[in-house]
Image 1 (tube, rainbow, N blue to C red):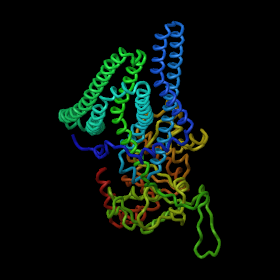
Image 2 (spheres, rainbow, N blue to C red):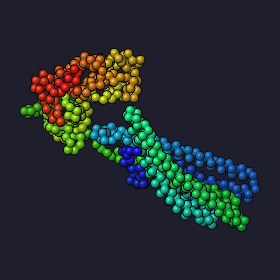
Image 3 (tube, rainbow, N blue to C red):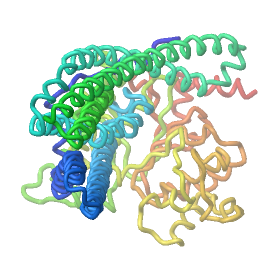
Image 4 (cartoon, helix red, strand yellow):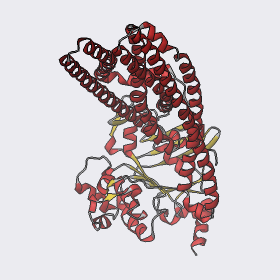
Length: 607
């Protein structure tokens, strides 16, 4: 199977104190739950340790006094302790899980907030699947860390220490006998930990490869079928699936070997305790109740030994998940909001001494200037190479050129989805870096080539968080001739869109995206290949309303269909990241240059 980006992830992470402290810092808002959890843990643990001792007292005193009433009272007291242990164990489990769920909620919110504010460059380098994994399964490992690892470790260690202390209090001689088998158990635990770590590493690597292969092949199933790659794909998947099976069996082998051996040592220890304890009973140096208590305590001791070894794998998973979560959280590649102009966009006129002209963000004129702008997605690979042009308020400017000329890049840098490397871009004479991102993106709004609509109603997709009336939503739809088809839907504007809006046509999705822009009423509208995926009839409807829609606004239109931009006030022809030609349609045709060649090529293709 092919290598994937999943293989670059660290699949194991040893215990990291710094990482644990950072995870624990999320508990600060829930200190009361931490106190309740620890308190309940202490009480339930003490109760579990007291119960064997209480049982010993009940049995010995009942045999000594030969009083059935005392035995009944002792059993009733034992039942009360049992109920108390159960109650505090329930409280500890409930508060620990409540605390964990709230911590995971906070982590997901922090991580999502950080992600949605990252730059487009960051998002383009990180596959969506990886980011989703960080927000879901990697955060979910915190549940294992708090409930299965942290709390369980604390209780297991407390019980082991408590059992050892209790054994020596009850009978130091028999306690020494019980401890004889402990050194081999500890050695076995260390060996098992190493084997479990290696098995865990192999299992995670194999599962990552299988998941990546599945995601890739299922997404491209049409290509697999068209090129008759079913058998090859099945063979490759079978190979990866066999590796995953072997890795899972290897992990199972470690635990299937370790647990029975620990059980064997536990049984051996109890057998030795019973033999030695029986002899001590015969010599009257040990009571029956004491022997029963010892057996119960030995059983109680070995259960945490098994748990600790097995929970080490969960600790590794939690460490790996936490490392990935914080690595993403620490990545900071957001577009810095350096703007000082907020509700008003201000500029000082040249030649004026103190006069300052202010424009409300709602009445931006829409004067766009590019001055020697250079930009590269990758270092030393410029896409825009010293671009300079201007678009006056209310003008319709069209940008054309071959694929890769830099057309869409102009839109990206104008909206500050990417920051330019050099030069300056101005809106109404103000560098866009001096305008807050909120005001800039309120003033400039694109309609992208790939329409994005979200699950929800049509009216929610048009308003998209804007507090506007139903009438305004319908007016926006009417402006782009979307009202008719929306009204004909079973639930009209309340129609729920499925994932990727697959329950409506491509043209209808495009019309809704137009209506969304109109509802938000920007001063600058950008149409990025906005009609390239629309059928002829739908495009005709858009063309009927587009002049009214763009009236009074600055608009930039990027299109391969040159017939749609013949009436543009200004046509910018890009070639290899540079402005090759500029002018109106007739002027450029008469020059017999690059634009004229593009136009003739399209005309010949149509004829």
